[in-house]
Amino acid sequence: MREIEFNLNENPFINMLTSRYAMSARINVEKMWNWCHENDKSFFIISMGCLMNAVNSVPALKRRIIDDKAVEYDYLEGVCPIMDEGNDMYMEMRVKTPQEFKDMIEWHDYAKALSSDILSSKTKGFSLEMENRDQTNIANFSCIPWVDFDMITNCIVEGNAIQPLITWGRVNKNYEMSVSITVSHIFVNGRDLGYFYENAQKEFNSII
Image (cartoon, rainbow, N blue to C red):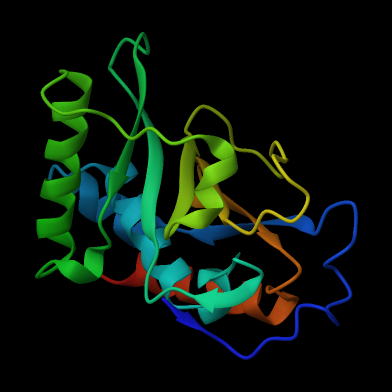
């Protein structure tokens, strides 16, 4: 990470009760949905990879406040809850960014193997207190595949928390999928969210 020039003292959102806000929008995922089913790949994992790439494409989403200074990480890794097939076991995993791999297929296989190892207790899952998650280079990703939602809210640990929270839902009959992102207005404005959704759509339009 690196320190950036950003006047925190003059930021209009720094002293508000909470600087957190959320946006939800639908993304067309028809191409990637069909590709995953034709090639026996996990749409859940590929979706996370696409959304991780979209987050990392927007500099404002990689910023944090550490030791009262504004910093920007080179990249954010992903933390995501995972469950076994019976929905009896709930764990979290931390995954590297797809950019560290040859292609999305290689990353998919890595993330799928990691998920399996965590759920089978071969590998420890991710564990970090919520109030400390702003101090590391992660974004939180979660899927609610049972609901085609229009909007969603998230728990707020601290009013000035910065970590992005990304949630995606069920794919509907039109191959549209809701994607919600919660961010801090200290760093992230509407144009930044526009870039996020534009880049997310490009990721889902790409054929691996």
